[in-house]
Length: 219
Image (cartoon, rainbow, N blue to C red; front, side, top):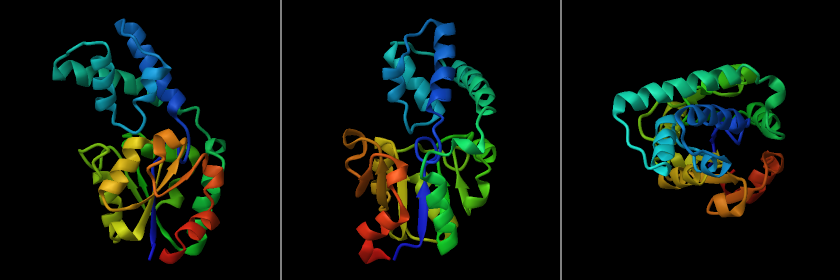
């Protein structure tokens, strides 16, 4: 039986992709690196350090670990400043509704995000009250597609993976959910998250009614 839900943050609850893009773009321009929206799309769902390594690999650049940390920190300062613009109006359509329904019906809810700024984003959205557990980039060391962040959330909720449904918008996120033995709901195009158990184009379509209808044998 499904007792818990675990949500990714970016692209599921809200969309901070633009803030990430602008922060990486500013750093890349300062460093003279090639970086555009096509490259940025490959950063969806992965950690800050892994994102930086991807950009460096794309530019065929190698840097020592100390410099990597300095640059990642520099990007994050820009990103955090941009996060101050987020308000409770910035929930993705449908996200607040399903979180409210889950609260009303007594389901356990966790966040499972690779972002180290997840707590800040939730506070800006006034969304902390919807989550029993917040798993973020500080909670585990291994990034998606490793299932560590979702396993962390399930453990803190006191549930087994097969008792949870994961919401994700990234290919690596769906991979992580499946690798951990979770049921998965993909948000986004088929070519990105079509391997999820169930897929919707947007969160607005992913109502609790639709979820229960599809996984009817699990409720």
